[in-house]
Image 1 (spheres, rainbow, N blue to C red):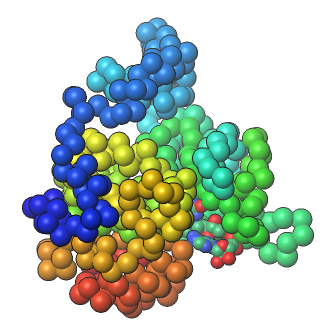
Image 2 (tube, rainbow, N blue to C red):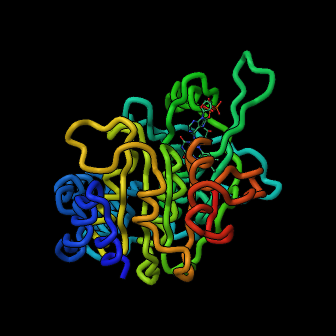
Length: 346
Ligand SMILES: Cc1cc2nc3c(=O)[nH]c(=O)nc-3n(C[C@H](O)[C@H](O)[C@H](O)COP(=O)(O)OP(=O)(O)OC[C@H]3O[C@@H](n4cnc5c(N)ncnc54)[C@H](O)[C@@H]3O)c2cc1C
């Protein structure tokens, strides 16, 4: 079993997180911390937006949180006002650019914000499948050509009426600077979906996600596909490198997964500049850590996903040649004996 093997091989630095993984049971009735401690807030939300409307036969007013809170607390599935089949905003092909209105912005940390864009209708879904991304386009007044960049949504694929992105600002980065200067109800052009790695339940027995910084967003998409589907039994090992603890995006969501699925989800965090009290790994994601936490190359039906800044690709897997050409496998994964077809570079 993976847990036993890793317990034996773990370096002291990772024993803390491994011990938590191996001994923490699921919370009662599989409730995550968010549900347990956020119950009051959920009920308030429900009262404010959802349940009152539902009790008179109306949906929870387009609020995804209210709907999910209601479904989690009651175990009942809510319908939607119109009961229309969901219309997909993004259909690909000849569709071209679709401009979406920025609905809200939430500060996540010193350089990262969560952006919620409204889909054209409150009952619409994005139309994205896992794993895929969208392109954004922006042309500033002084720019000769528009800048185009891909982003991976963090909202659920079946979320109605909105799509969310978690985006880090890079100094002098034209798209991220523009996004971080945007305020509701400004609009931005999107196009897609850009398919990446099509996921189907139990496609692999065990997947390993090696991410740096905002490279976590496609990994989170995969985790949502797997853990939102009760028939998908895939095991997931996440190795996530960042500069400091406050840079670790979606940490609460991953902690919820660790608590809810201790036998199937494990996360290992590495920090370049950790605080004194930090119990996880220090430095870059390196050969010792990967040798310790990844399943061996001979294990059947595993897949390793890599996403992050150029330095991370170079060290771990080698760069992609182009969006359609994965390039040669090199770096630590090659050194450890993994084959080209066991690795996917986002
Ligand atoms: C499939 C895919 C999905 C992505 N999803 C997200 C997402 O969900 N959230 C998000 O914030 N970003 C995501 N990115 C990165 C995003 O597309 C842009 O590259 C990033 O926002 C920088 O764009 P920019 O125009 O602001 O700066 P650029 O001009 O592209 O870059 C500015 C500076 O930052 C450096 N840089 C660019 N990207 C990175 C990086 N990832 N790590 C370290 N240094 C970098 C460049 O080398 C340059 O020095 C994704 C990238 C890909 C390929």
